[in-house]
Image (cartoon, rainbow, N blue to C red; front, side, top):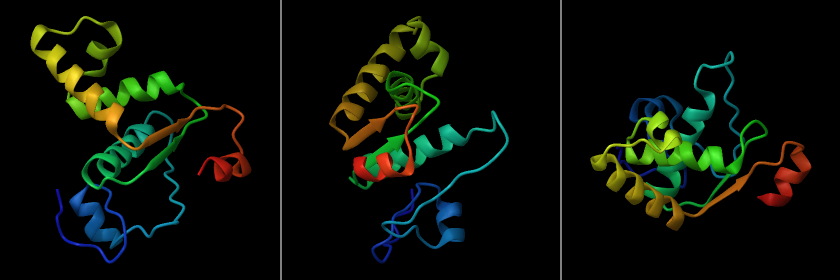
Length: 129
């Protein structure tokens, strides 16, 4: 994790990317683009997790493809470092249950709002923000 102070900017949680970008400014619109199934949502969730957990910044996560429950399950998987299939299936090993519970408690306390309205527009996202 990069502990270098940024002048009012926000870190992504990926040191090399932060070094390339310099910083993401508050109020910046960041668009992640790639072909389908390349990990765009996972990357955005990793950014969000670092921002809300390590930097204590409020996060609005907007998805028109996934439900809030699916987003939360993926975040629990990432925060707890547990395979997503174990979180989704409920067939986690005993040692994973503690990780899942801890990750869920961290997520519950995090300053996160999820907007999963499939009909979101830039105007409705702006109102949510």
